[in-house]
Image 1 (cartoon, rainbow, N blue to C red):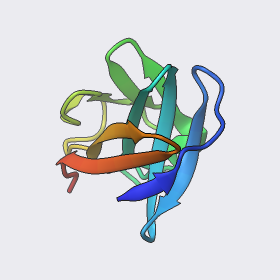
Image 2 (cartoon, rainbow, N blue to C red):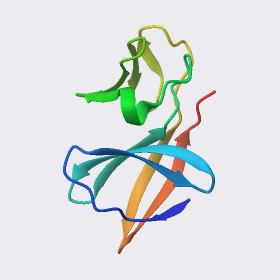
Image 3 (cartoon, rainbow, N blue to C red):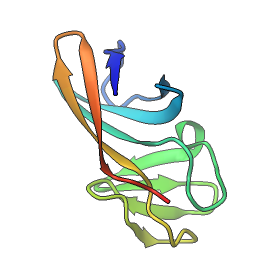
Image 4 (cartoon, rainbow, N blue to C red):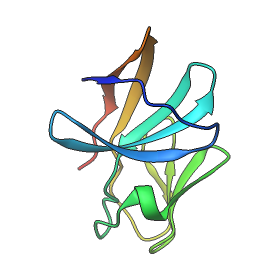
Length: 104
């Protein structure tokens, strides 16, 4: 999946639509991004509103599910299902997203 590289501040999170799919994009600075499915697999909360990055975990504040930023597996909390995780590669003014591990 390819999208135009958005203007973002370090630490900013944003919901983007890529090929009809809602993706949570988090900018870490430089050419570093994290990308996940924007919907929590527990009860469908919008992670662009309720998701928080804490160290190596994405936390959904709706019901406090914690997911690994590396592989999307649930670490603690309500969700027993993983979240979809994407690798993000920067090529000029484009971001190329590839599924690392799919959610459920």
